[in-house]
Amino acid sequence: MAGLTLTIITSKATSLNYGETVGNVSILKKLSLGDSSQITFVSDKALKYDMKRKGRDEKGWKLLDEKLKEYIEGNIKDDKLDVDQFGKALIKDYQEFDLFGGLFTNLKTERKVKLSYGDSVKRVCPAKVTYAFSISKFSGDMNFINNIDAYNRYIKHIEDKQDQAIANSEEHTSHYLYTLTVDLDRVGVWEKEDGSKEEVLTKEEKAKRVQDLLDIIMTLDRQIRGRWENLSPVFVVGGVFTAKHPFFMDCVDAKEVEGRLWINVQRLKECVELVPEQEKVVLGVLSGTFLNEEELKSAFTVKTLRETFDELKRQVREYYGVS
Image (cartoon, rainbow, N blue to C red; front, side, top):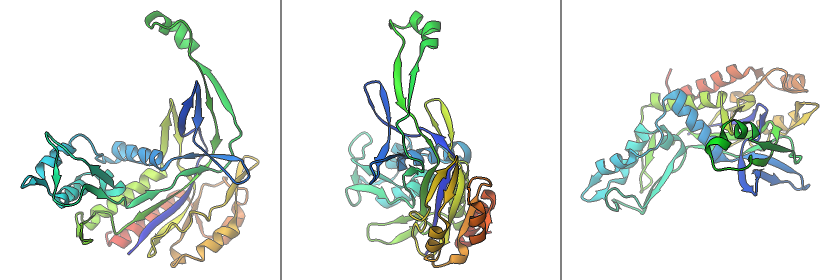
């Protein structure tokens, strides 16, 4: 039994996740803290969306699509969908379903489909992602925007609009903090109704999918409203441990001071002491990011980010027993 966990501080990024629009004002997703201040956040679904997008574009991942209908029709036996065969086929062919799970209810092709058991086809996601919370607090900054250039050049000539469009949007630039935890025993495995498990993928393919996910996180980005925002890490702490637990989720206490980050090293040290295999904890930093980088280096063996991800991938391969 083992789980991979890593907690990440991202590069600085701007206005990553909007919620509802009120009138002509775009509102960022925010949380209120106990002191009545606010931080912005990126939802887990938004993060996973970009992980899956990069998986498709850079790793050739297959994402769930309309061809699922063919998988349904191909696994119907005696007028019922064989849930186990259907689930195993999706794990084998769709990296999205394998790593991030899924739930299908009220299935249909030309007619409603009956299931061999249960009322749905579901897979618990092995790879779980928290929200990404801003490290700096939201201060109410706004951006007044219009489309006067486009309006004057072509919109007024081809659209029935008498005036330019005017809007306001909330803006916030910050580092963001989130945690990823992967149940390595669930990757490539189908769990049946009776709780028994069936191996679907080879150990080599399991290791490859988790390593691909680590590669994606190392260069994660988000495309939003015509911007390309960098979410690659400036700080990572994690490892592969026998206890499946997000050890560092509440342990990374960082704040911005004079345009750079400061991290609570003592808090991090105490959290590392709770990890069963402390020798497997890996910590990586982008040089020049932290004001107290020397304190961090005196307390831990600090690696470069590339070295950190290489070591995490080595630990994944070691667990699966592949070279």
